[in-house]
Amino acid sequence: MTIAIGRSNIRFGWIWILVFTVFGGFLEMKLLDDVWAVGVLEPTRSLWRSAHVHGLLLSFYNLFYGTQINNTNLTDRAKRGGSVHAIIGAIVLPVALFLSAFYNPFAISQPLAGLQSSHQRW
Image (cartoon, rainbow, N blue to C red; front, side, top):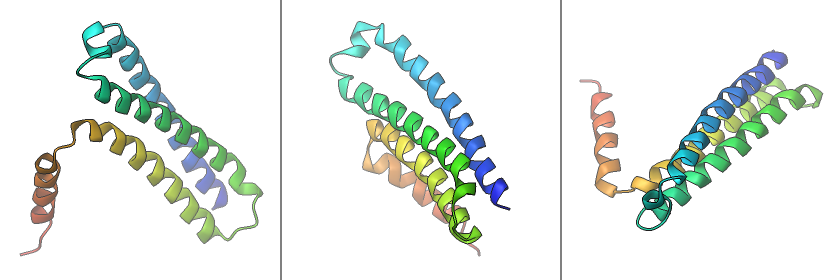
């Protein structure tokens, strides 16, 4: 059971490293464009760069968690809870930073309202 918990974090960490390495390559290509790198889109670039850095750091955190979880004296429930929280945190923080470049209260609230209404039982 414990080995499977660590493996899920290791698998997620490697996938997330791949995703944010590709995202970093996209940012590097966009930095060659002078209009995009400086000026009007500077806040967007800064937020995306922060999302890239946080995504990579949290990927390495998940790799570390996955390799070291077997060496702890925690219960399986605590290990599983930590594993889930590490993965959720690694998803939420970079995605929130990426989406905050497009922050518009109406753009975010409308899809959430649509999701809420589509999941109601009649």
